[in-house]
Image (cartoon, rainbow, N blue to C red; front, side, top):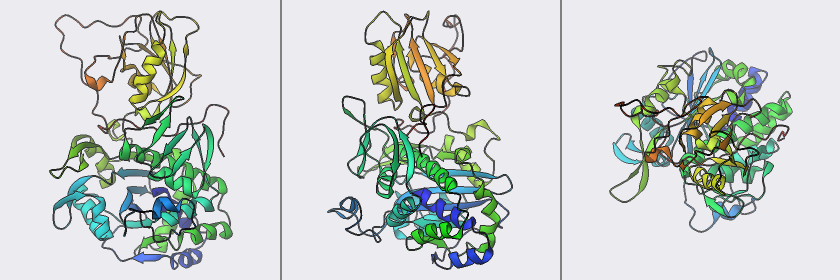
Length: 475
């Protein structure tokens, strides 16, 4: 749902004249908030909220029973929370997703609760809670509700995305019943953005996605990129097109009362040329926790969180240190597996374990010719993805680049020495070598291998859409 807020801001800043921007701004509901002050030419942090308010949803809307049925909550909560940092001087956009079940002290009382309870008190309470816990200044505020989100997607003609398999969520109403390019309308777009209990079909049965809110944040980021790409493809060169987006948003979007014309015009050129693929996205790292009352929540994992938080504090910028970029995640990788061992069914055995670990599966077949040893092939620039897959296999396979693979694709060819497949977090020592002729044996008396980098989250990786195969463009 965060994309809806970004589209609103993007449409406003695309306005050709200050007069048009003033007229557009005057139509939105405004919130009077205590916000950190900055100038339009300095980096600004926007707090973007997807509210679960059903106020604009009617019984005639598509899938209304999901949102208005028995047991649905009253009032409003933050269904999604993100901080977007816009840096005009560096032409950089960074986005930090915050889990709504994050357990932390709520301002001003200090009582520990889920972060989305702060929003149910007031937007100002949420802003104060974020600033006091993360020391991130909030300069502007944008909120979009369910109805506004659906209207925005319908107004731009839907959001195209590629699904490599059928997926569904019976809680949110999501239903993608076949693989391939799909055009998500407002209802399915909202169902996709809200999906916390996603299931995917592996060809024989429906498999539960284990990542829940963490996987949902990753999918929301992909939806945001796809939606911004769709908006860019429309051009938005006329006031008629811009007014269509504004009309879709005006009844369901709230802006802070300090977001002025100068801010919009100062950011206009940056939004006009933004490349969705260049947006730096981060998911706040957390660990699972059960409260004394038995509630399943999440706690901030402070060590890996600090480099990310520093980006939004203005202490560092993306790219100045490799620790600010989250490592590759299983949900970002599509793995094809080819059995070159003498044993039948080894590729299928590997696929079961990798699928349970959150990897997306490609073809599972026998190798045309058995290799001398197991090899993991990755796309150009995808070394980290290849090494991540290799860590699940033992003995350690080679890791090689294959120019025929595209971003996010990894191909595994199992050799005769292959014996084990397991999550490296379970203690299996499956360190990788790159293009080495034989697996390296540890030196006598050598200590244990250096541990891998701290992951961005302890939750299992979840499924998310992948890039379409070569030659396929989703429109």
